[in-house]
Image (cartoon, rainbow, N blue to C red; front, side, top):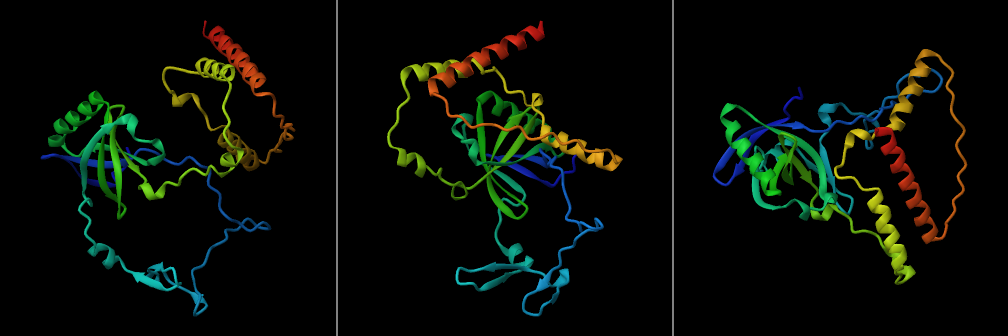
Length: 271
């Protein structure tokens, strides 16, 4: 069972729901260390003072903010603790919005919320079931790891999920300079119809994350296992791919035919 990283309460009007917060995701990235090629020994990064040109112990390291003119302002843990942070142990519900109205580009990290004790179970289930029935998300503010964030509460399976979000000024506007230089271009009606048919042929009712695998990670682990066992590593030659830009209508037609053939094979395998 995952360890709670934070305990507090959801402030839902005058209702208070005690919750424990646990991480909903974990990184499965294969981690590498920097090592010395001749003997595989670890390479350590040293903290050095630029002014004195000597190593610095951890107890002399503090946070520093660099201003636009290059000055450094030291900020201590005491300074940070003195700042008002009303959401430090409180998930404050601000409003409820339709789920489709929140652009996923704002989503950041996900955490599961669970009732902190027996007294919190009933209001927890009430909020969970009401959220699910309404099709809405609860917009909240919360502080995690000494940083206040906007977040939403949504239902995932049997749990309430706290999905932290980026602030609006953290989301970049799309760069459309190259498209702007092309000028106005419209797709033909025949191309639009084939594109719709292609989307329809590749559509499913429900997204199933379990059918997707990190094949690169699997191959990387196989390579590492082979090296550990002293086996020869066979690396296939990269396939040369010629980049061809076909006629758009022809590409859509070929894609549609391939999608239909793939769907027929899939249905045949299920029989």
